[in-house]
Length: 269
Image (cartoon, rainbow, N blue to C red; front, side, top):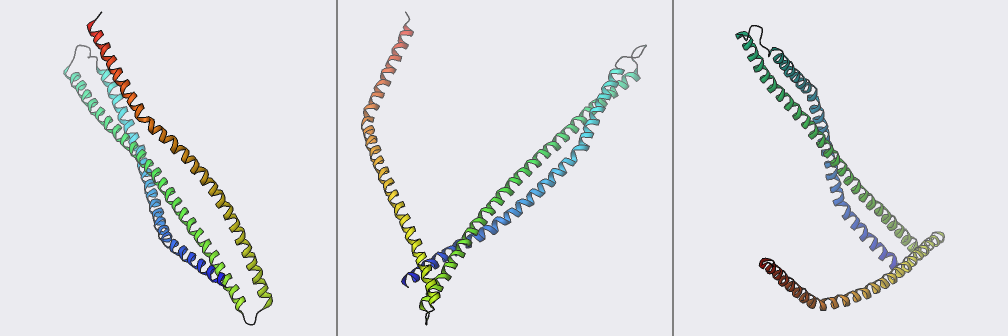
């Protein structure tokens, strides 16, 4: 009976600890699910922004193409009209050529503006697509966090069910043992279950003892290795001052040799 009470106390303590662990996980899961919803909304907005940016491209492309064509037409007209008419330049010819050149300047300005607008729109598409990719990564990260938290909660719930089943089993065992009058078949079943539980505990104890022995052996090996390394390190530390002194002396000798070589080079042959 003492074992049953101690085991029940231990299981109840562990069950309370699991409940305490799940409470912050539930709050964390709710926050993560909200983050998933928010990131999905951001992704939808980013996708819409891509569609809007892409919709601007065709008319701007058409406008840029038309502006380039206008520049080409004016350049051709100017080239065709560049030769003065027979009989020499006239006021009308000069006025027409001046007007064409003015129109060409305006057309080039319009073409540059159209090309700039097209480039800006294409850049906006690229930026919107980058925003979509970032939003998708955020959605994936948030979804992964939700799955991890759900897995942790699921593991806790599984453990809680196991503990609750164990507690119910202990209550049943205690009830059968203390029943008056005793029900022999039920008591025999309880005894068999208790024997099986004892056997499991003995196996677990034996496994833990072997693992402890292995751990102690490994610890002794590591301790001996540490002692060897400490001894070598102490020997190196003892030699370090002499090595540093030799290095300093070598550096001084090198500096003196360099100074001597410099002097010889300056003095000449």
